[in-house]
Length: 309
Image (cartoon, rainbow, N blue to C red):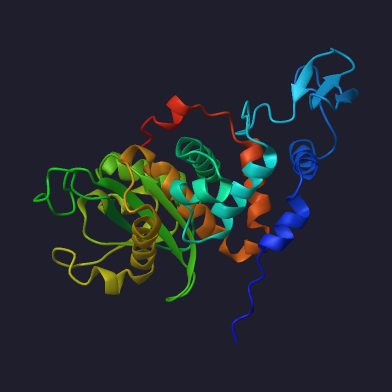
């Protein structure tokens, strides 16, 4: 019998984070587990200005906001709203698009979009795993033809985003951790950078016959290159990575329908975050709050900037 998976229910979430005070206290514990430390002089002596929710250092007299240096920086929305958005994006494996977040939070669509993208940025900031052992590696394209180009089809059609995907094969049927990265192309230098960032040397890597993968044996990997013509039989010979690719496309099409290539890094980060932490669903919300608290401040222009390797 499959063991029951315990998650943080909406009722449990509201009991823990139902007030601004509770959210503020939790955020403070995440940011300063051993107590407040002044970011300017390092002193621990401080006072708290309740009316403005500011920490004032007793040594240098500098004031520090609870949300300064986090994705909540200078936001006019209360922490209760931010925490609820984090919960919705963390717990639902199908994701939560901005249009649905807008309805849950009762905010405008631009506000919901900005909050969702900031939270996804925090998800994507989760360190890329260093995969090891038996690895299945493959390439994929996300997206489709641009508007006005209905006849453009095929893997490399205009408007598609190239992605490299590596998956640990714990057993022939069990997926371990995964790394998914949007890239500019599948040439050897790009594949080399991906492998250096995501796959430990000495791992046994199984791939298809794509030219960019031909170098892996000379990079310190035990490379098994499948002999197949025009990708025939790839799904049967690389079943785990193709399962992840299928789930990824279902996730993007089911809730988001389409994504812009320049935002692919964040949507892939969201998918990877939930996939790699799927065995700790009960603490997924708290883990994401921690990522949001420790992520760097990001602005709207930065969110709209293309980010591919």
